[in-house]
Each structure stands twice: as structure tokens, then as C-alpha cells.
Length: 86
Image 1 (spheres, rainbow, N blue to C red):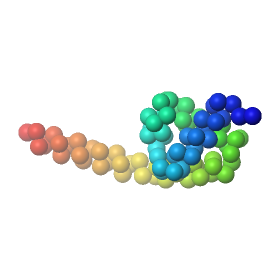
Image 2: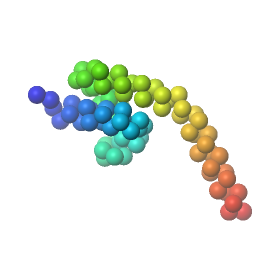
Image 3: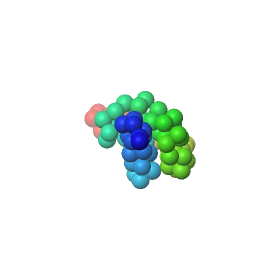
């Protein structure tokens, strides 16, 4: 029988894979901290559902590889908005 934390880790993993979501986005949807999401999908999920864990790992690795691009785009938008206000 799965504990509450194990069930939550499976739900988080399924959400991340289905929506290609970031840890931050999943945390917001489930109402938990980013640390909780990270612990659930990296530590607990490995022991509960290894197939789902490997799918989640691929999504998280992809998000990590794209992180610098999203950050650059956010900065670009920030300065574009500031310029319009002048």
C-alpha cells in the first residue's frame, strides 16, 4: 500500500510528463513547494515507479537544458516593457 507521499510523487510525475511541466509549474498546481516536488520526483518516484521516473527525468533534463533560453527571453521582455514605459 502506497503512502500519501508516494501517491503524490506518482501524480506529480504523471503531471510533469503529460504537460512537460517544470518543477515550479508542478509545485504551483499541486500547492506544494518546489523542494517537495523535486524530492518526490527524484527520490521517492525512483523507488515507486521506475518507468515513470525515467520519463520524468527526461522532461526535467530537457527543461534544464532550455532554462538559460527561457531566462534570456524573460530578460528581453522585461527590458522591452521598460523601454515602452519611457
